[in-house]
Each structure stands twice: as structure tokens, then as C-alpha cells.
Image (cartoon, rainbow over all chains, first blue to last red; front, top):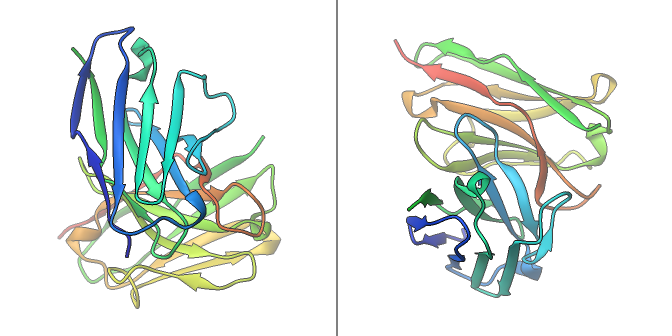
Length: 108
Length: 120
């Protein structure tokens, strides 16, 4: 099983600031099958990034995914008020599919 | 428009059973890998099952032998049969769709979630 470890657990940002979220894998993720999701309270998660760096439909370009192998990053270039949420990484290259424990992005 | 609508959640006693349904709209369920993902109160996401377009099914060890995923192509619906339920199975259960047909992919659509509470 691939264990995903996200850091930091909580990221405090002011609107307009840049933020970097990390996701480390216990073994290499096949074919960059790594996704990022955003979840707001009471709602289902929403796909932001797939295949490591491809933005999902209607996701603004201030969200950027990068990385390969065992190290992946989600960068929020200029945080907007609607971006404050919890972010999860997930690998779907091998079974069992696994998620990181999440990073909460909060208003500073 | 692609939609996933779950139903069947509720309160069940430890050791009991429950079946969740996930009706797909705007696409053909049998052409995509369909998964269930759960989220315990205040916790993170956990994948609990997948059914491939070819019909193969897989589970993590935590639910293997107790949960069964299946689908009814005529109803365009996926099911999750949960037996021998434990208090730690209490969670919101989401139905999800893998984006590309017939292959593993990220979960591009999610249902609204069905709350399952296991308690006496």
C-alpha cells in the first residue's frame, strides 16, 4: 500500500498570498497517477488536479500541480477567499487507492 | 450533465447490514471504474471499493469480506452492500466516477454523500 503524507497539516495564508502544499509517497506513484481534491465543509470533494499536473475542468490557473515519483506539490499562486478549504492528495496508480490525511488552508 | 445520486443511508445496529445505491445520470456507469469513498466524522477520505468496467472488484483489507460492490447496468446504478457493520464504519459514503472510460483515473465526479451511522 502506498502511504501518502501531506504537509503541513494546517497552512495559514492571507488572501493574495502564495501557498505550497506537499504530498510525499512511501513509494513511487505509477505514471504520475496523482490527484488533488478540494473539500469545503458539508460538501463532497472536488477534483482540482489529475495526472500530477493537469487541471480539471473549470479549475482556475492559480492552482498548479507538479512533481513526480514520490514528491508532489500543489501551489496556490494567489489565494482567493473561496480557496480556504481542506486539500487532499490521492494516488490511483495502484490498489488500494490511497489518500493523504489532508492540509487545511485557513485564513491568517 | 453527469450526476451521481446516492441513497440508502441510515442508522443500523452493530452487526447489521445496509445497502447503498448510486444512480448515475448523463453517462453509462458500466463504461467507467466506479468507486465508493468514505469519510468518518471529522476525518479524512478513505477508499472502500471499486468495480471495473469489466466487472472485477477490489477492496482494502479493512472492509474485505464484509462489503460488496456491484452494479445493475439496466438501472445504470452501482451498489454497496455492507454486512457485519461496526461502529468504526460510521461515515459519509460517497459514490465516485473515474474520469476516463475503461481505465483507472482520478475521481472527476462525486455524489452528495450518504450518511451511515452504526450504533446501538
